[in-house]
Length: 123
Image 1 (cartoon, helix red, strand yellow):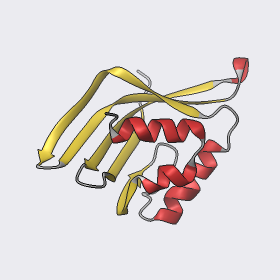
Image 2 (spheres, one colour; image 1 turned 45 degrees about the vertical axis):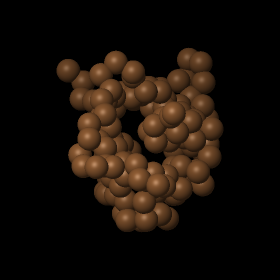
Image 3 (cartoon, helix red, strand yellow; image 1 turned 120 degrees about the vertical axis):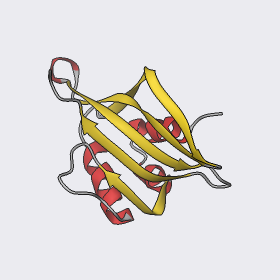
Image 4 (cartoon, one colour; image 1 turned 90 degrees about the vertical axis):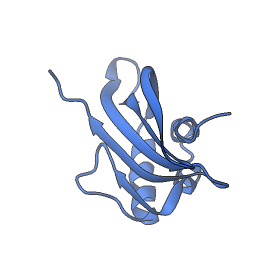
């Protein structure tokens, strides 16, 4: 069975913005990699992912090593790890390594409650 972050990854890579948005709880907070302020509503989440997926060759790949799932309470789990955002084609491709955390309610209809993503500092 796929985890919600894995499903999120598939939807982002396919440019399925409606489906990406459907994974977030109504009161979810997104601390997005490329946004200066927190996003606290569906229209903001939609605008963020519409902007990202509209770029040529845009996508994200999860780094399997180091990803972790921790139980917070009965049906709430914290997923953490690293992934790489990318866009562009061939020699023009740009990559942006980032770290993430997804707080997910895995009850009857799983939803992302909180999603934080930030670039990994050079160093």
